[in-house]
Length: 346
Ligand code: MN
Image (cartoon, rainbow, N blue to C red):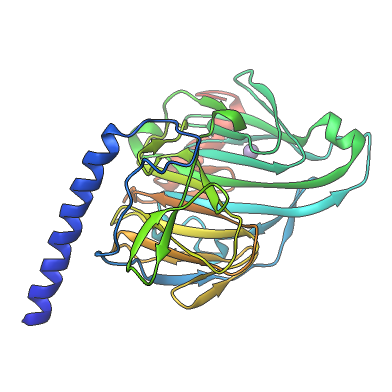
C-alpha cells in the first residue's frame, strides 16, 4: 500500500514538475544557438526510463553499390513494437575511391510512409518523381513523405564520387497513419544551418539535480520535435522527436526529458555510452520502456554522438513488403498494381 501511495506521489510530483517546466519553457527564447543557460534546469525527482531491450550492432549488407548499411532494428523492423518507426539503416564511415560511376540505388517506388535521410559525411544525391532534385551534405536532412506514391533515386553525389572520400549516412523509415497514407507526397530539405543546436543538461550527482551544461560539453541538434523549449524544423504527421546529440567530454552524465508512452530509441553513431549500467557502442540501439520521462546517458568516450528518437505509436496494423508499407495485404497488392500500371500516384 505504502509503495502504491509513494508511486502515486512520485507520479503527481513528476506531472507537476512537467507542468512547471512547460510553463517556464514557453517564455524561453526559441532557436537559441548559444549556451541556453537561461533555459530551465530540471531536477531529478521523477522516474528514469529503463531499458526494454538492446539491439546489438547487426551484420552489414549492401543497398545498391553505394550504401553498406547496418539494419539497426534487426528482426524488429516493420513490427508494431517500434511504431511509428519502421526501419533504420546506418551506413557507418567508409572510404570510397574516386570514380566516374554513379554509385547508389536507381529508380524504385515507395508508398505509405516517410524516408528520413541524414548525411553525416560525404554527399547524397536525391531525385524523385515529384521533380525534387537535391544534394545533401554533412549535417543536412531530407524528410521525404512518399504517401500515395513516389519513384525515388538515391546516389552518392557526382562531386563526391569524382573526389572520393569518407561516406556516412543513415536512413530511417517512419510510418504514416492510415488516413495519411494516400495523401500527396511531400519533401522537406532541412539544411544544417536551420537545425537549432541546444546545450545539454548535466547531471550533478552530488547535488542530486541537473544544471545547464556549456556548449563545450556538447549539444543536441533538434531535427524534429522539441528539446528544452527549442523546436526542430521538421514537420511530422505524428508526434516525433529526433535529436542528434554530440557529447564532447567523457565521464559525465546528461539527462533528457522524453514523453511517457512514446517508442524511444537511442542509437550510438560514434564513441560509447552507458545507459542504466549497460554499455552501448557503435551501431548499438537501446529501446527504452514507455514509462518514466527522464533518460540518463553516461558518456564513456570523448566526442561521442548518438541519435535519440521518440515517437508516439500509431497503433494500426502494419503490412509491409519491399518498398510499400500499408495496413493490409490487399493494399500492398494494390500498390504493386498501381506501380506496374503507373497509376494512383506513380
Ligand atoms: Mn528510397
